[in-house]
Amino acid sequence: MGFLVTGGCGFVGSNLSAELIHRGEEVLVLDNLSRTGSGRNLEWLRGLGKIEFVNQDICNLAGLESLFRSNRIDCVFHLAGQVAMTASLADPMKDFQINVAGTMNVLECVRRFAPKSTVVYASSNKVYGEIEDVDLVELPTRYEPVGRKVIGEQTPLQFCTPYGCSKGAADQYMLEYARNFGVNSIVFRHSTIYGGRQISSFDQGWVGWFCQKALEARDNRNADFSINGNGKQVRDLLYVSDAVACYLAAHEHVEAARGQVFNIGGGYENSMSILELLAYLGARLSVKLTPRELPWRANDQRYFVADCSKAMQALSWKPLVDKEMGIEETLRWETARMEKASA
Ligand SMILES: NC(=O)c1ccc[n+]([C@@H]2O[C@H](COP(=O)([O-])OP(=O)(O)OC[C@H]3O[C@@H](n4cnc5c(N)ncnc54)[C@H](O)[C@@H]3O)[C@@H](O)[C@H]2O)c1
Image: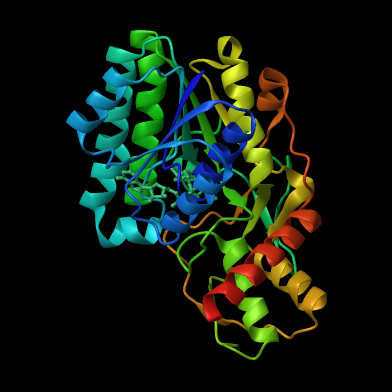
């Protein structure tokens, strides 16, 4: 099997590539190393076994074409992208070029050079906008739906922010290429994936970011940090090894999954608000966390918890790592990373 992982030196991509290496698969990793930490992820991957690495931008169509012409590709995991909503507001054209035009380049190469291959795309819960038709109550630590606790794939699309538009457009192109051209494309809509090898920032990767802030506060290094909104916004946490298993399951079940979209997350039992995460970290590390409150981010969903039942059935997959276990692993990763950085 020949696997191409675009964004293969990023957080999810490096974990996925590592698992493919462990399985003895042929892995072609494509990344332009634009994300902080991606170079270190590449070094780590090289230490695990044999990979082929291409330092290339997905916006470079000619480069992608020659890659597809010269390699056998049975499966593409398309993870390269502009990943932050805030960055999309700062530079919407760049966001469009990477997420929409870059994805079109990948899809066109699949259609023309590897039409039988699977292509799995990492889309986002942002394609559902603010999900206004779910009634919420405001509890002391979180928002909670009045009725059903999980959000399914039938939720109306509402692209908000340039990032929502670019992820949504790519998501729809993926599905359209299955319908019109017979491409074996599969779309995953994620909200929060977390765990080792993520270089979290204020803009993206909130679980890792607050783990880092809590560790810094415990060590009296930097107690000053902020949250956007009142901190009661809820997401379901998906640990990265469960995300990796889901990508591999999609390829294994491509006949059932092709042309389909799946909401993928940790489910209601692994949901948390920012306030709940901070309370958990405060108790776990015996530290008082008092973030500054900043205005809400544009179109920030108050509540998103994925209904994973479609994926569970079609892909024979379910998340295995609970939030306590996952946060423990994330604290371990952040501690090691911070120690290395300050050495
Ligand atoms: N991590 C999450 O919680 C989450 C949630 C929803 C969706 N997603 C999607 O999953 C995918 C992977 O996310 P991640 O958290 O691993 O992000 P990441 O930023 O860690 O990884 C993305 C990788 O893509 C590379 N890249 C960026 N632009 C590129 C370009 N033009 N050409 C080639 N490489 C490029 C970066 O260097 C990076 O290594 C992204 O598409 C993201 O939008 C992630």
